[in-house]
Length: 273
Length: 273
Image 1 (cartoon, chains in turn orange, cyan):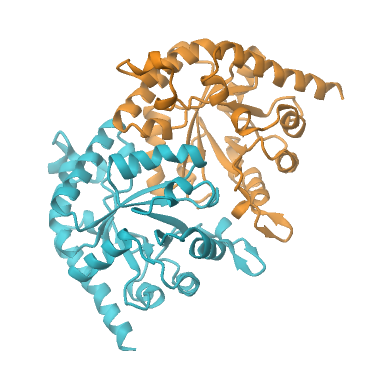
Image 2: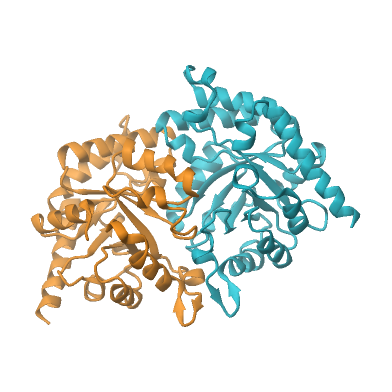
């Protein structure tokens, strides 16, 4: 069973012939100088990036930390950004990279803010508190919960590699999400591009689950390795995210198109094997 | 080595003779009707609660989810609340219950927002990404990072009990935080009141680390069991948090005093053994 957001992603992936996600990590200090003088620099920059890259993009993923860094004003500009995407590009999936998770009741606050007020299609979540705690997210059949499984950072293994009966924690997370949490078909998993071997295992554990894949570009993940390890049986199942390498390129449109094409070349090669 | 925030807590705990933390989980729908009609209901309610309970309190802990639920307006009122505490009760420790954690660079956004803009003394963090990812928090010698170890929710064990070589994940988290992450003396651990047996083990693993203890009151944790399991060798080491049972009591001041005294009675009993 695939829920409405998974379907939305698949349809957009076909229509734009793209598995690319543009990470709107629009850190104020890094914005081109011409945006710095605007009243709403993050919003104005995002609008420009969205228009530049929208044709090549299946998902947009702002990381909320870069907006919270500015306090309330940053969050106003994140809301404006979401309003713009929902109006101008309603077919593109929106992911709030918030990495939240609290206990039951409390999560309702995040659900309200991220899903209902800002209107995101999906949110990233920590697994540490267990599925019982995450019910307010998981109950939302109309949205997607994207659970951190194998993260892209160098030190990801400190706890994620802790092994019980030969299976590391990230493996257990993949199993639990696939087998228990995903009853409504609304779960996805975060699997970093920097760990293609682990990704291959997660694909075997969760054959039909879509992966959000950070770590391409600035973090050094390899597109061909990701595509080979992570595509599902329908040749999709991957939301491949790049942020800084696109946002701060001289020509973001060209960079997004190039990465979209590079992913598709790897998909073709994979399909022909 | 104890850092400035641990010292601040200890001094306040002595001065107010209290290990009590009041959780400012000021969910809009639950506020007394007289606050609902104000322009800044969460802020006005918080100011009232802070004045009612401040004498009996060593720490205030707003959970940011209840403010984000209202979007930007809620966050404005959280900032106002922090301003009020810092001005009127600067000796009381402020904990942002945000349960954040992203990869390295990105965390800087949260550090800026929570520590520098809002001025919190401490923040709660997920351990799943490892200590390498959390460096931007851990590097802040002047603040405290409070790592989720054993959470208070009923389903906490789904991953936290996964056992490698006989040691569950929460035990590994306690060991890593105590032995590696806490080089600056600025780490604390979240250990739920609902799991006193686990708390006793965590106290043995991390004898000098202060615990933030949610789960008293509405969640059903037992004060005597917590005090017996978790006090450190100096008779402190616990920040015992209650939220709804105080906030929505008919007389919050009386309720806070009662719980403060109940904790102290258990401390006396424990000391006399």
